[in-house]
Amino acid sequence: MRLLPAAGAAATAFSALAALLCPTAAHAAPGDTITLPVQDALAALPVQAEDRTGYERTKFRHWIDADRDGCSTRAEVLIIEAVTDPEQGANCSLSGGSWYSPYDDTYFTAARALDIDHLVPLAEAWDSGASAWTAAERQAYANDLDDDRALIAVSAASNRSKADQDPTTWQPPAAGYRCTYATDWVAVKTRWGLTVDPAEQTTVAGILKTCPNEPIEVTLAR
Image 1: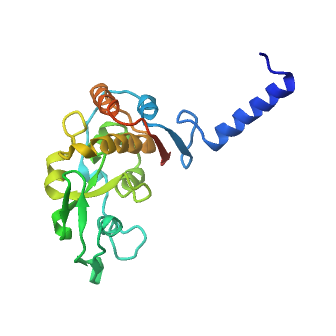
Image 2 (image 1 turned 30 degrees about the vertical axis):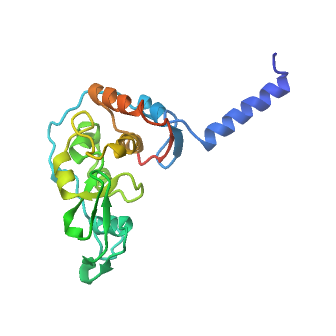
């Protein structure tokens, strides 16, 4: 059945409004929030070979004190993610408290036993587009407290086992966390406009096929 002209105009106006309220990844701008199924989000990521030429970890200034409250980004993540709140001492030293490391399904009661992992490692970000960013953009990426998927407190052992690997060669030892890990990987790459390489895309797609195709909500950082 064909729409009458007035109805067609109304439908067109509604579609335009919907696009404004929930822009697609292809037409969104920094600061926009998009929502789409995770498999669609993965499919929307550009596929490109990686290039680590020129990478140095120091090109991502991290663990800054952005709000000048005495606590570095590392400490802020530990405070946010604590299962039992730690006490804060001078210079934001933390004592007591407890944390859960989802990578290996383990609890810890000492902050020093934990690392703060960049879910998408700094080297991986560099390979996937951050080599072309400004120093300020790389600093923002390395200290991203605005999306709770970007930085995660995990056991030092699991973080150092992961190092700068992507899901093609490393996945969390706790198998029950792998769907969340793959979903969050896609969310972080979407947020920062990063690419995926062919093997990475295939691996992540394979993981997600075993998981609910849940919508992810992402506020674009760039």
